[in-house]
Length: 133
Image 1 (tube, one colour):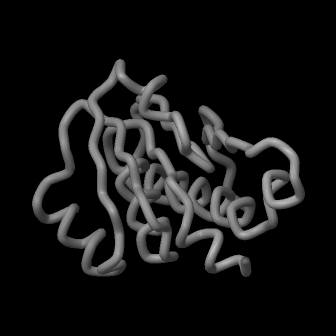
Image 2 (cartoon, rainbow, N blue to C red):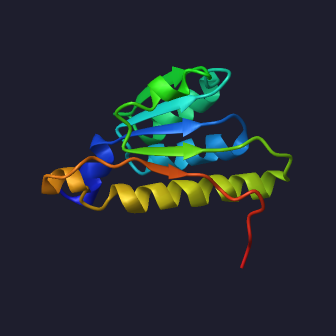
Image 3 (cartoon, rainbow, N blue to C red):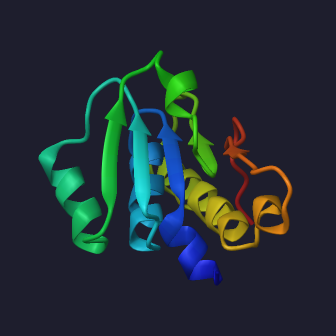
């Protein structure tokens, strides 16, 4: 299976509320992730759900409220988790985009499962204070 095929077959959980989680979900959907499992207090608004499906018509969109996140993580190839913190909107958007990029880079690579080993689960947690070069 090629990298895009692995991304399309992946189940990715995005844990958290707010702009960073939304930005990450938007990047992951646009990249072609097959299933996005949003673990947040509230389900995505119609506008956000429409944008996610607009960039990826084949997307399977799921919502699970916390604290159900342990069960919701079962079967995920990657988990992008955000802690609640007061930051400026541009920093949150950048953190979300960077976390999505890290997850996609790993998802596109062959997994140990494809080589007969165990499946992996990547957890991407942006640092408390993002740095900008």
